Image (cartoon, rainbow, N blue to C red; front, top):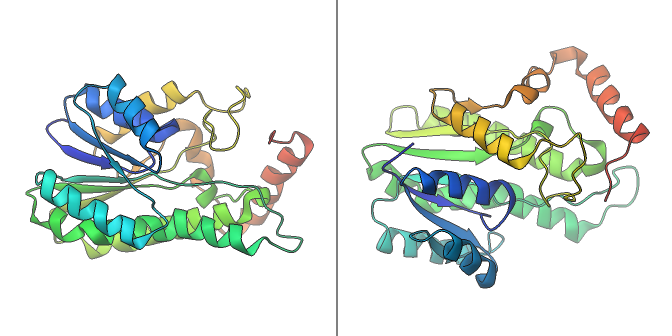
Length: 250
């Protein structure tokens, strides 16, 4: 939890910024990434000593450039937190917006795969290193009105399991954060009482990250993480019907 050099994608707001500031307060060298320089400057100005890199996680060339910058300027880099993601609503019962679907898959799934690939050899060279993939409770119980998003998070969870196994004999540990609905602007920041307050989520997540758990799950996620196998259809249908009856504002 201390003494690390940590790179966090999608860190100009929400969970990414919350994690960046929490790790920064513990004395780590934190490097944040995002598309917009103005927002990066705002976060680093509020947290003296924090650094920033412009990154378009959808663009392989931008990922390669960011990785080269990190390897050159921050040779002690030993933690990668794949946090960047987007969550547009969709309708799997109708014609899908193909461009939107491709962007969600590129950002949420290919982004972490490419970012880790670009840095993995450097991470292997460190005495101890960690990759943290930010998935979602929706990796286990999909939200039907964000079908593609939920599918990308399920895929990233699966990829994380494989990645953890493949790195088992190295010094690189692979961990997963699977947030519940958190009150950020990922969907719409509206202080809905069903959304977990961001500060509480960060506090609880940091507490779990300080343990040896591979999955950093806050208490409210655990029941859905234990998605009951062949009984999942009733769970998924009940979860989604509850949100039909009391919709998420967007």
